[in-house]
Length: 163
Length: 285
Length: 129
Image (cartoon, rainbow over all chains, first blue to last red):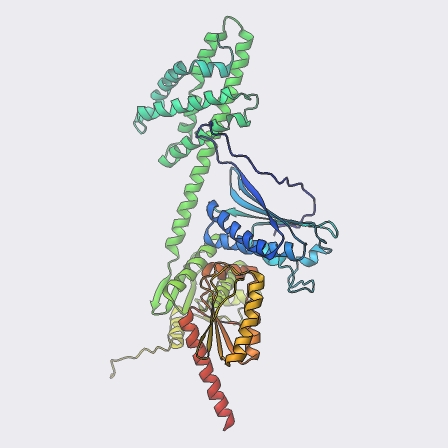
């Protein structure tokens, strides 16, 4: 089970430039990443469709694509509804041994007072049926959440592609 | 007069290639698995990539980004050799055999003018070649592993076929141990077949599964839930007495799950639920 | 504004979800459906999600709500056409949609509703004797 971490890590939001055309064809593919805003419920729909497209391009099998898109829907909605709006950053990670998609949901909202409580099943803030965090965690391989009251929330999830 | 390793690779390109090729032809090309033409092309391409990298500088760090294109090229060569069934030593030889011609050229350039520098450059050359050879070996390993993984997946497909027992009744006879990856694949193919055939009942037979632990039970329960969500029914058959005991001991609840001891019993139930009866037309003694 | 159409077929209401819904669209659908049940006296509701490649907890809740609320208005709900990848994900998510009847496709769904209605009518008739 992935552990809950609260150490902070700076995630620079930058585009990785495409390689210059003069390079030989032996260049490995560049790491892709980008960010989209999450301010309205329309942004949630856009985010879902974007992640579906990217997951398809990376070559995730259908079930894994669906898990990523569903997790995106849950967490993006949280960002909009509870976080007062924020940003989704996606990164296509290519390492020697594995390849995956990392999504980071960031907001500057009120934060979560009791993370452990929020990660338990059936937790609700009273506004509805809760934030769906434990469910979202089961859909991905790596899950990390960092949140403090008054300091916003950051949820990072990763799904690795099986060879 | 070129005096450093990068300069030699850039300027003595042709000579290096000829000598390297002749070294290799004595070994790799000897048994005819790879043609002279192909060998010549690969060695030429490698030297070209190496020369290009040396132009871009930054060779102080062998692990650095400057040599990334070279490593990438070697990975590709290694991969194709691995698929063809070469031994890892044969692939490493491809790189190692570059040492002799390289040292020879360095010696020619530096022996008289600067013996100290010669020693340094030979060390540089050996460090570079060793590093690249190890990288080649790693790439080979990864390719072999991915081949094995692919073969395992194919074996998986073959060993868990979904069988149509009757119109609207599917059976999945599970054989062997259920690991997580297998359980996933199996679940997905069963669900897919249910949709494709429009079958109302799926029988999962675990007679051939030696042990049922909490993990296996969890996978089964998830499969059953998914089948129900899709609008079909599920029966688990092949519950041996030992398995029934294990399930109780482990505290696993199979509430709401229909189970039967044998596949035959499960089929009888499935037929009844489908509104079908079997009559024996041969009456009499 | 996107709105999911509700098709009336006799005493049956058919909803075919074919778009990636906004949250508010789901809310509007619930309102529209209840109004329609009351207006038509429908006895059955069929929700066809065979075009959906994703169902999250919000849509799941919508479906569960529709099932309960329709029941209060004496209409049965059946969910049909769930795709395998969606089913697997929902199970992993922990949504079992209790109390929601399901069927493989619209055809089976209609048979299920017809059968259930017949049973109910017979039970009512029996009770009156």
